[in-house]
Amino acid sequence: MTMSNILQMLSENVSLQQIRMMKSTAIANAYVANYVAALTIIRAHDEKGMHLLNDKSHIKMDKFGTSMSRPNFWGFIVYNSDVKNIKKIILPTTANELAKNAGRIVGSRRTKLQSYTTMTDNQINWTDAAYSIKLLKVRFELTNSNLDNIANGIYGWDSLDEMAKGDLFQNVFTFLMQSDNESDLLPVMRRLTNNKYLTVNSIASTLGQKINKVFRVFEDDGAGDTGDIGTGPPGAGVNVSMPDGTSAQDVGNVQDKIKFEKGKVIKRRRRKWKVRKWKDPEQSKKIDSGDYSNVKTN
Image 1: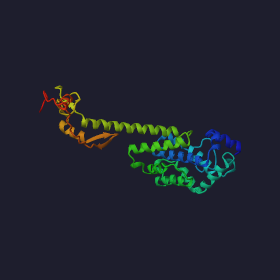
Image 2: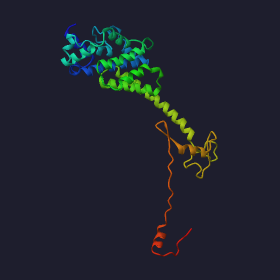
Image 3: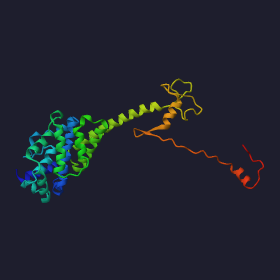
Image 4: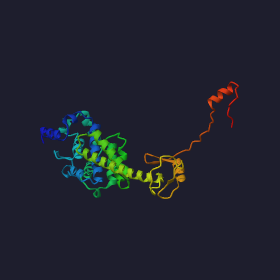
């Protein structure tokens, strides 16, 4: 393949000027960000995203093509940084640094890494896939603090609750957006992140409504068991009742002791207020002046 063909194909995948100016860490981050996004998409069983990863013909990264998946595209740059044609389009220091770090990953491991991005969930050894992410972090000396959490989340996917999956999507989306904002996997991760948080918010809203019912106090105005909601404190001149028979005093005691903040139960400490009696200012003036006439006494 001629140099002009390589340049043309590169420019169709990502800005060639961008690659020329990128340092080795930036290229490595772009590669790893797309790699973890691919594994997350597979874990989420997102068919549209997996269609973008269907690129078995380039997992050995020994040839270039415009139809390459994003992980294979950046993998080709990373693992061929010592090839003459690639060295001509990236900075010499970048090429040397990438070649040194990529050289610490053997060829069989490289192919295995890339092959995971073309498989389905049940075909992947997730213990090894999570190890591969941590291996890439160490070999390319990446400092993203969320990479270990991402690797652990992908490995333990089945044990994650909805909120934890939402956090995983958010971490992967942020990493990908910062590292390769032209990636075709970015819209997929954005959709997964938004959908997951919408689901979580819906669950939280439903839970909040159920909690509300526990503490709701109804005013008994003679209209039935479900009167208007009381606006004053329990027992303050209104007759109150609960649908489940709980007394207003019980509700008052519970509400005084606990509160809900951001979906969590927070124990409320009761303050001990000191009662202070204030004197009538008019009477105080008369006493101070020695005039005790018409002073009210208890």
